[in-house]
Image (tube, rainbow, N blue to C red; front, side, top):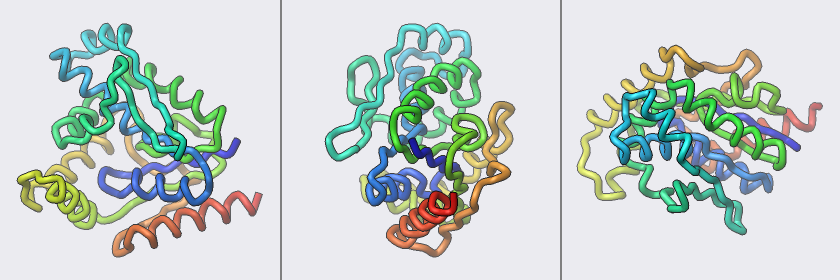
Length: 223
């Protein structure tokens, strides 16, 4: 199986770019951020956000599944409920960053992520895929873009969904999320020593996907 690990900060376009690259290459795309968001949603529903002991107990009873349709599109289920759309709010995003710092949460999800990678050609994206989840991945990419570029992309996305936000609010959230992810004690966000840096600042979606596909093909063909 060929495993591609893509890490990077919030708003770098990891999910959209990884999904597009996976489609071109015929791989399965695994959005690990959706798993952490689902844990955050579950914690919010159980009034457990910020309470590690309560979250650990909650996870012992939680059933989180990734399912893929015939086109390879990922859907995430919480206790049998499709929550793929419910986990995409700014509030859940910030809570996901918080719960991802907890050891019980990371242990809970690690086995699920690795099991999928063992059985499929995958592009898996997140914040510690190359450094922790799949350290032996065939291809490691650190997808980056300036904070302003990432905030602009996120701002447009939220406005299209009808959210009432300002660019400055979104930029503030991006900077806050970067700080949380890069300074957390457990598995902080950083490129693996052998990751290829792909900066998409100034690139459109198609150009960014082509960049990633070129990196993957070049790395695999060189081996």
